[in-house]
Length: 251
Image 1 (cartoon, helix red, strand yellow):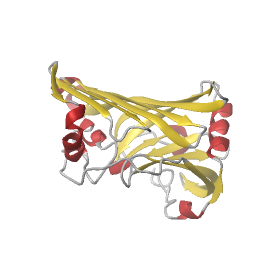
Image 2 (cartoon, rainbow, N blue to C red):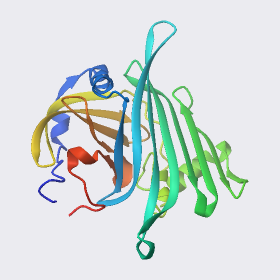
Image 3 (spheres, rainbow, N blue to C red):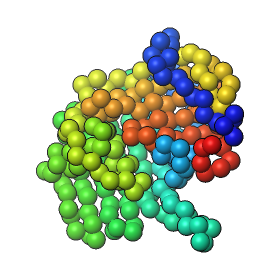
C-alpha cells in the first residue's frame, strides 16, 4: 500500500502556490457533491482511530452576506482484537461559520467520552476574547468558562488549538503555553500541484488559523473533492477512495 498511500508531501511547497479566493474552492465542493458532504477516516499519525463526516452548506444572511456552515462529526475508536471489534472512546462534532468565505465567525466543539463519563462543550465567537467552556464528569461541572485559561493550558499539548483531540484519542494532556486566539482569522486558499496517493494532481489548499500558531489545512482536488484535512498534533482526516485506504494503518 505504500505505493498508493501517502506521498502527500505538500509542505512547504503549498506556501508558494498561487492565491485564489476561498469562495472558489467552497463553491467547487458544493457543486461536486450531491449530498454536500464527504466521509473521511480519522488518523493519529499513521494509525486509524475513527471516522468522520464532513459537510458544507451555504446561506445568505441579511445584508447579502454569504455564510458557509462547516460541520464535521465523528467517532474515536480503539480496536478490541479478542472480539474482532471496535470500542467507542469518544464522539465529537465541530462546527464553524465562515463569513463571506473569508474568516471564521463562530466555532463550536462538542465531545463525549462515555467510558469516563466526560462531556466537553466549547463555543467561541469571533468578537469574544475567550471561548465559553463547559466540561462535566459524571454530571458534575469540573471546568467552566471562568477556568478557560487553566483548561487551555492543560489541553494545549504543543501549543495546540483543538488539541482536546489528544485527550479524545487517549493521549495525555501536556502542560504548555496558553494559546490565544489569533488576530488573523482569515481563511486563505492557494492552488498548485500536489502529490496525492503517488500521483501529481492539481489541488487547492485551504488554511484556517484557529488558535495561537495553529491552523487547520483542507486539501481539495481540482474537481472540488475533499482529499484531506490536517489538524493539530498529528491528527488527519483522509478521504479513503482518493488515498486508496483499505487498511486501518499506513504501511
